[in-house]
Length: 553
Image (cartoon, rainbow, N blue to C red):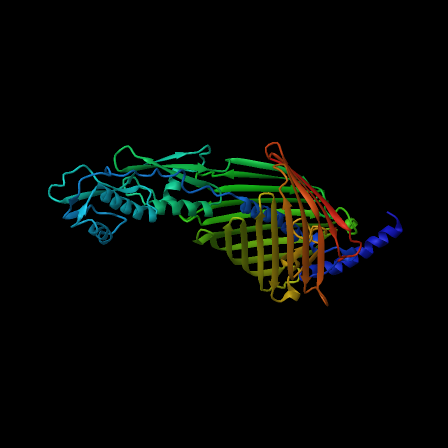
């Protein structure tokens, strides 16, 4: 190393040493326009987490819910021949009904007593009773007139309200225990089957499930007056995995990312899930392990996760300074669906997370911060073709501790995320995304809690983490053309505003086009994005980004 190079390195070291402790507490742009998002290991982990969350939201939006009931019920023919001599009834009786009141039945029967009628009139009465069943959604209940003598003027009508004879499960995958489904649908052999309650229970299950779905068919039981329920289950594969390669990283730790995902569905037979994610670049490694399990009959689920990542600056203006960092995080929480209608789903949740991160320069610790956080969240989902909309609001209470300075504090952070899509015919789709963050005591907010800008999940014309800020908003609009099963071109515009950085806010504007492609029965997929940055926000900024990802499943 030349004398000049050693001198330059000392200057950089002094500058970074002076600034990095500040990065732990507030937004600072490092020498060369380097942002805290590109040297803070916690923020680098958050960049990958944001990509995963965005993918999960998009998969949820595209999910097709199977119908709760299969097939159509056959129409019942008339109970009696249409022609008969006229006759007069002095009374009509019904057996006890679970679904129709005796007053309701007496009102119907009263119109056919004490006057001349024929079999055609009795057929009309039976159709009226059966229509009452149909209007209330009872698919396995009907009125019949058994063979009998009418010499005494009394007619006996039998109400057949089917009891559950048996439940038969079918479906290719059988990873979930049958008892798991029975408990959530409240199916008990020998009890009268309430069709609307069964359909509503299946519809609720499908709307709130994190994986499996159900569809029911009704068939006659082995005995008269009974029904068999055939439940077809649609479950994810027991084991699924993917390998991917992309250039979604940053200059400092390497643009090229290699990684993989693994999912083990229902390891204990309770529709639980274990997922693992590994990502590596030239200068960073990331790992996350998560377990989720339904714990309530209404599909409320608990989750626990742990993750870790390390980083080392390999390229860029800080490459010679031996800047390294590591971070780990742990979390647990519970999400519960609260209200469901034909179109709306409301969900609430709470959780706790703990993260610790350390950054060193030439082996000397420059920042070491632990952050504990509790949060509550509310989420709504609206699904009514051709619309899908989802919004999540979080209220976070974060308590960071700086091991170097001994400083600590409490911050309230509000974050919101919106995703909305609308189909325009069969070929086109419009998608909108938005997000925001607000924090108290923004001047003191640690950079690990900042909102990040740039990257594939934000403003695509900028590097990930190019700017971080205590407050901020982002907005994206995308237009897709479903050209074929294989090709999906799209265009987009991204906007972001980083606030509370100093004297003025910073606007980020990018736009461009891309194409998604799938091959070999969706086992191979590719995504290409060409994005321009329409406003410079840091020195020596690139004019845009060309982003490519390949995935093999």
